[in-house]
Image (cartoon, rainbow, N blue to C red; front, side, top):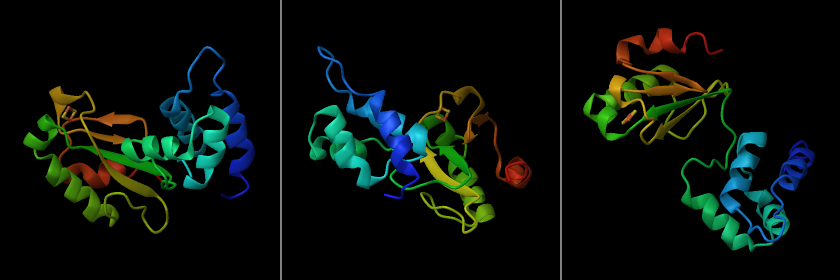
Length: 156
Ligand code: FES
């Protein structure tokens, strides 16, 4: 793990340390680490397990189970394309392809200049105006392939 992570990781984990009679909450701790670092470095698993009082395998199991948890850093902007039922029925796959063509990156990868990471997501709760794309915290509805260049332009 790179050194810049260490102080922030330790500080974050202190807020997740279980106080008896509370039980350790692995998912909550992993989400807190991801929020602080942008991802959960696999090298941090032993430290997380030690603070929570659980095994490395328990932490690794939760980390690998939830697709919202990332083990690699993302680009400066995270594009998440909804692949829920409504968005899929409204040509979400075409939107995903248009995004991948525009930024030239596969799902799960970062662009070479680390501007974007593209991911798929399950229902974003925006079905009434599907297909939906989230760029960082911005929720965009009724997205079509033709608007992708202008939609992504402000995200430098
Ligand atoms: S299925 Fe995409 S927002 Fe619900």
